[in-house]
Amino acid sequence: MKSIKRFYYANRLRLKVALISMFFVMLSALPLSIYLVLQEVDETGNRQWDEMMYRLSKIESEIRKEGGAQNIPPSFYKALLTPGTVMEIESGGISHNYSLPEIKIPRKGLHAQLENAFIDLFIKKELKEADLEIQKHKRFFNNMKINIFKDRNDDTHVHAEIIVVLANGENDIKVTITKNITSALEQPICDYMCTLPIWLLWFIIAATLSTYFGINVAFKPLGQALQKGFVDVKESNYTKRFDITGKYGKEIAYVKKNINEMLGHMENVLNQNTQALEDISHEVNTHLTAIKQSVDILNIKGIEDEESFNHRISSISHSVKRINQITSTILELSRLRQRPTTYEAETYPLRELLSTYVNYLTVLYPEFHFEVKYPKDKLGIFIEKNHFFVAVKPVMENAVKYSLYSNIRIEVKEIERYVGISITNWGIEIKDEEIPKIFERYFRGEASDEFADGSGLGLNVTDEVLKLYGGYVDVSSVPDGAVHRTTFVLWFPKEICNIKSDAEG
Image 1 (spheres, rainbow, N blue to C red):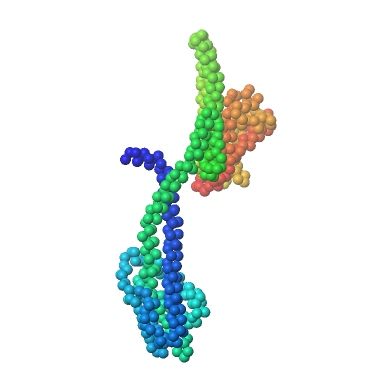
Image 2: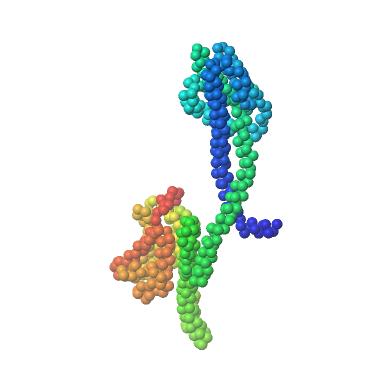
């Protein structure tokens, strides 16, 4: 039993495909076999017609030879009879009947019902073609009628009837031949139904075995190619890609494409993680060095020099704060690049999001005044809430950090397909040649280096978030009196905007 289970689990895909193939083979085989048996029934019926037409031609020849039906001995007619056949010769008002009875076997049950269904199909077909049969023999018999009917007393038996009027001088001779054709028609049907289980069993075995071994033959080279591909990928430290030709079909080519894309994504994630670790290591080492220097000086001078002690403690605290900021920024940037999706995004009222963040800024920077202006329209933005704060945070912090005045202006704008958040401060200049570079990793302008410290990563995070949602950033820095008015506008596309809410616009 265990070996059977192991075989099943090892080959369940092949077995499932084999069973599906068997099912479709059976579906295709049954209509074909039914068609063939109908053809056989039709040929049997045609043979019955031919036999009856042969008897008619013999009777006509004998009547012409003897000069009338009354001159033909009954033995002639009886010699033409077969079981289940009835002949009626009518001439000059006199009718003669000749018959050879047959033993009728009761036809009941499912077997008989299936046979009757086939015979009914044959009857419908022959009735449609009766005129063709009459035209076929018109040159021999000018007056012919063909009937197919069921026995009045037993509707499971079918009779074929041919009526011909033969001209014989002044007296016409009417010949009627009736034959019970049920036994002849049911023979091929019975043979079919007897052999059907054998054929179905053969189809099941043949389809299952051929599919099972066919899959083995077809998938063996594919398995070898995949195995070689995986080995090559591992040996190349996951830099090489699968190279499987199109001879395995478009489905395998599609799988290959997805695997290569997945490997490419994994390589990008690995490179990004490596870069993030290098970035964190570089930045953290710089500040750890500063902390170590401060600790060394404290060890040498002790805590007697209060001014020096406070300065070193402040320097250590600043370095720790910077380490936390840098680590948080780099990790956030890494997460954005590793999961470039918006599947948790929802539509939020923009005023609600912005008010929440401005209230936080008011507490964080009590010395600053944040002037916020909203449009009359009730606007919404389709975004993950955390992504919104991640995108806005670096721009807001820079506005505060590089401002020479305590006033920050925030304005919500709307143009065509975009909703924008404009953040303006009055402070140092961003040169025109520096604007295209400020979103690059670690780029810092000349004035910013002298004015305030930073990692050069914050605006890169903002740019990554906006690209994720199909947005962009506009930057301008123009003279305004003794300072420069610098404005960042974060444009988010209106994928699901202008929402209806009870909030005031």
